Length: 151
Image (cartoon, rainbow, N blue to C red):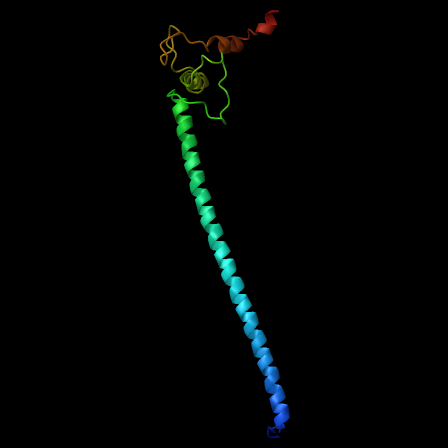
């Protein structure tokens, strides 16, 4: 086995290598400082964007709450303009209130859709106390009396 041999450098070669090493160290230090500045800038931008995102989320939640309150007030007939994203109520127009629409939905789904459990023997509606207006049309269709068939 050969022993490790040392290389003898002249003083001039040694100084030249030290200068190259110093230049490399300075360049690496500059690059590390630039990287640290870039990271700090990116972290600051991310923190700013995160704060803005949280602020927008809070504003969205507040706007959704306002919309829910407006829909609820309007639907319960407590005034206020109708919400802009709800369809206009069907019917005769201005005289139809949200409570009338709600009664129609209750009648259609709760009674008509389940074989008319709110209908008394005399044809009166137990929900409204008045005459049932929905029994006539479905009864004729079931009995086979279509209005177009008579013509």
